[in-house]
Length: 462
Image (cartoon, rainbow, N blue to C red):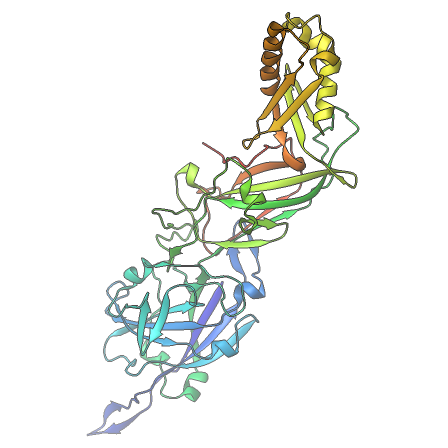
């Protein structure tokens, strides 16, 4: 979590005038001292320090609200934190003395402060002393109205962009109160005061997959218990994820660190999973081992809309990549064949013992005659179409051969280039279950291939 801080003094300058009455002297300028501190953020089930790129702050907006209490206070001024571009907050701390908009001094009303950081891709900007969102003024808006704004992007770790951050709701409040003793007439007075802390958090959640799997002992090749593949590489992709979020966390529950996510047409984003195109044809949607991806929160309770991970595992044997592979399942057998030839060889060996008696019109034929001209085609959904032909057969035998082809087709799944897929829902915590919450890191360590995976990416359906 990043802390944004300001300074205070015990009294404002004044003098005695008019029979000893205390008169407060105020200038048109007021200053506040900002100290942006990078420290550990609360992550899922553990504490993990943010990286320098995740903590970097390249720009910021300081918003001042005025009113009798936080809920009724309205936005009065917004000021660009203009020194950040020269000193991005990717180190332990950055201190900035910031001038606020003219007239920020309070006269008998309460002031509250909201910080918006790394706003480049969000829709926020400042014009004069006015906060704009999509070029629309937010002046006189309440904090709940600002909270409801849907930002366009949670940002990125690219240099000079940064991950968007805003106030982190605390128990009982979102914006800390800025009393008069936190405002100063000069930058020198501000620099010498104590600090007012503003807790801010990233709108983004980080998702990362790391591979440590090597030998896949759970898979035997061609039915040989002594032959096992190894992992050549993994690639992963997200299914059902948000790219937009509320400007400030909504419906915050401190004990559970939960939130409410944006809903609506097109959100969350889901891929067509009838074919592995997200890995093969559209590589901009897939990521390598160790890559980190930043997404918006998705806390929907609808099971099938929750964010999921697809992990693509490409297998090899020794130093050789596997080609198209086939999983055969029939009568309790579950065999992973490394090629079509290996599967046809198995069928020939089992013809007399397993298949001939079930195909009386073909029982007099030899295995070589039955499997003389085999063709195996892997379909987009991972099913396999087997075609067996032999022009020397009678019409009845050809019909029976077509029936055998159909039966065998139903026993196979095809794995293009030795690739298989595993699927995971993101698990946030024991109380709320599956979900993605802002300012959290979700790390999947892929340590082992537990069994033969799916031939194509297939979402988890509850």
